[in-house]
Length: 320
Image (cartoon, rainbow, N blue to C red; front, side, top):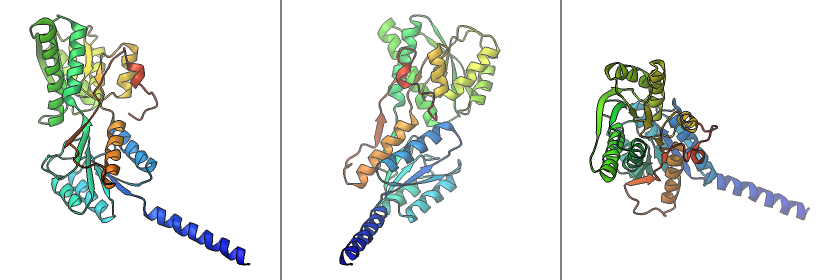
């Protein structure tokens, strides 16, 4: 009987310890601005999986593209006791107060993907480097075209968007620098700019207009893969030949499949899963007091993806 009592007491202690362990799990809020696109879904899934892998408890919210809902989401996450907040902000200015309030409540805030005003009190912003990626894409273009004059059609996201501007500026700067280095002069012309609102269908419509207005396009530069994929459909429908496709960012699997087939020139790595995992890792380190003096910006490694290295990056089973 005494042995049985001892065993029962041990079992009770084990259960209690299990509850205590569960209670000690680090709560991590993952505030997404939207989840209705593969890029953001991939980021959320990677962040959630990494939190679980590290022994934490993820709590995911979807602002559905609405700034006011994301502000409310952040407030709710703080109320629910998260110690780390991973946030992809829907507005670079509108989320500043909510982030500052979370930090004031003792939450370690890591921003990922989209820009947030640096005056906000967060630890670091994790994203790919538009300038570094752009330099690599620009060099790829010059290596491919040599001294042939570039007639570039830009397919951009939406007017005034700082990410889109940074992406196209990065590639154009990379082209100019590579041309100066190789040729001693710059030889490029922007023949037109269309606005594709970041979508495949938007890229299609923008490219249709660009093709009508310009007969000598030999390079399409898009600010993401999705719009370039749409632009490609417009080019095929118009039966236009001799146009090379490049994107400033993403590495979307549909684009990578075309690169593998030789039907798409190059894109730059903006891996949502890598960005999300990096953000979560930094959040855990901060919560454990191991991430002091983080830089305001944390960049993932840059890369240009073309047919020469496609097998290193292409995963047909990827979410994005």
